[in-house]
Length: 108
Image 1 (cartoon, rainbow, N blue to C red):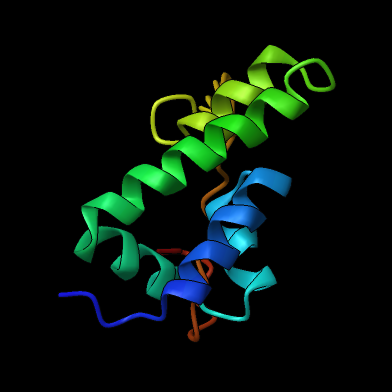
Image 2: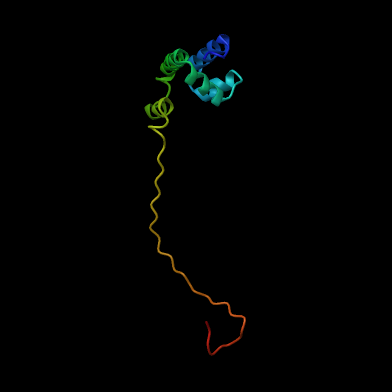
């Protein structure tokens, strides 16, 4: 089903060539990223055009960005940042009893 305006699709492809990130191309064309994804999912030809436009846009940035950045942008799910934290701490706990009775012979 092709329910979206062909002019909008052309604008999105142009935006991807200038700035090859789906989220920002959608913002540039005043639609949400979710709507853009729905458009690509519904129309496989449009999706292929988007990928081609995005690839041309990525080539423009290829010699300006680090390889890590380009990989993260091209395939964020595969190349996302993985944060690992290793904790090696020795913690002392002090047990304190709060007793309403002032029984000094048998503290709890």
